[in-house]
Length: 500
Image 1 (cartoon, rainbow, N blue to C red):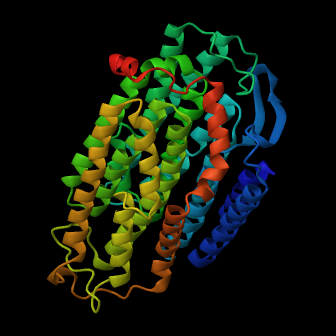
Image 2: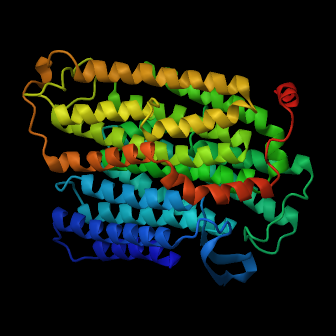
Image 3: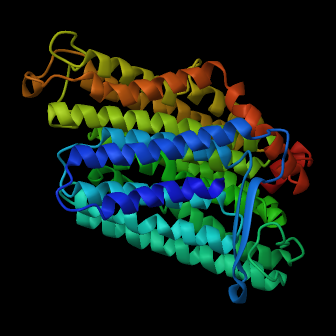
């Protein structure tokens, strides 16, 4: 059942890629959307059959693969990975639908997107360290090519920078995985049999350092973030949607699954430092976003700040805070995808993303009133306004982290205020006021351009009003995982302050 989620997009990529020459862009997009929709619907069916009360891996598949390496084809899904699988399926469909029918080499383009989706799905399902690494690396080449071929003017530089950073990330993660297996004396790479808790603390810290830096590059956290703004600015809108909405979550998912879960003693030891690292990322990302004139780069820097909230909650390592990390991953995926889609429509119709050039786009007669209204909703969600999914995820994170790291949490809350500042600047400059002369004759915005953004906006509001629909799938798994690893914050607040 789980293999179908990987095989369907792989089969779709093969069908489109090896289709006889002459396939039109419209047909390529249609076929890609069919295969992506099948995978997404299959994910929804799987979610409907998922038992949230069962905390172990469900729908498991196990096939011995390479015994000499200890590598097995081992798949499973739990409350941590299920929401991310659904998110990946939804955003893949939206990215394909939002792609331009007239783009060059459409068969190659859509094959790469489906291959990218299969790699991400496999990484979320893998219950074997080496299998996870293979899927983690599988998404590297498609994304590199999608930026390098269909990106902007400096696409070569941005794609190469992304490739170098992500390759370094993979090297560090693989080294840590190998160390975990060999030093713990495990016979294979299976997560279910791996026991690294008996390792000396110094050894755990060394292994955790590789995992932190490796996945920290992917998230990305300061100072490993510099590849992200370049990649977003040069990538096309659909690729930015996938990059911010799904691919960054591989980093946060990896921290929880392989860092906190496998090395709890070392994680607790480094927790105060991780919380401080989160503060740096949140405040730095927000400060850089305020200074931007390019709308897309502003949204890119906002991602750096909002991903820092996840690290803060992960450092606190209580059941409620880890639940907040999952909610924030889904929340950020939906909101960032919405913002990048809207910025893409503005750039497509107005021909610019420069806040010094475009003004008055909310004009009801000659502007983009619907796009402007959706942008206001998106920035409100990102700033944590009640009624949106961004509010509930950040509230849970701050509520749960404050008891463990009060100072770091208060500093991160400043980031929420700064989010309102830079997005207020964006909305005020680009959408209010008199329509600027440079964009006075705007092309018509069709409902086909608005539909993906409307879908995301509806989901954002639904989960904001009824977050229990998201929480119910995740809470039992998270609670069991944290309690099993003895990560509940049982130390006194005074002792935590002393460690800080």
